[in-house]
Image (cartoon, rainbow, N blue to C red):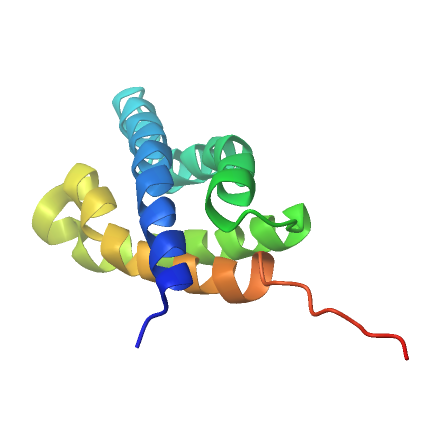
Amino acid sequence: MISHRDTGILLRFLMVGVINTAFAVGLYWLFLYAGLSYQWASLLSLILGIIFSFNSHRLAVFKTGGGFFRYVLVWVSIYFVNIELISIIRDDIGDYIAGIAVLPANVTLSFALMKYFVFRPVKECRVS
């Protein structure tokens, strides 16, 4: 069962994610339109999206400190998952739609990694 606190985090994650995703997908399409391959379009939109979204996740969603290095590591991992998933379906639906079709898997993976790896709560230490 999902807790009330986790429900709030998930809803904030999804709302911030819509903004971050619109930004990144817009860049992905812009880079494709400019003639870049889907690999480069995805990489550039990912880099700019990381810069744009780190503080929104840290401040608006998880409301805790988080390591930028871990955040980048998560997104590098998601990039490779993204490229692999796009490569599997792009011949059937094209590069533009494939970039959107893989979003549910990427959202699920990114939420789990951010919650439990990047922005995990710091355990309190008691001194006796």
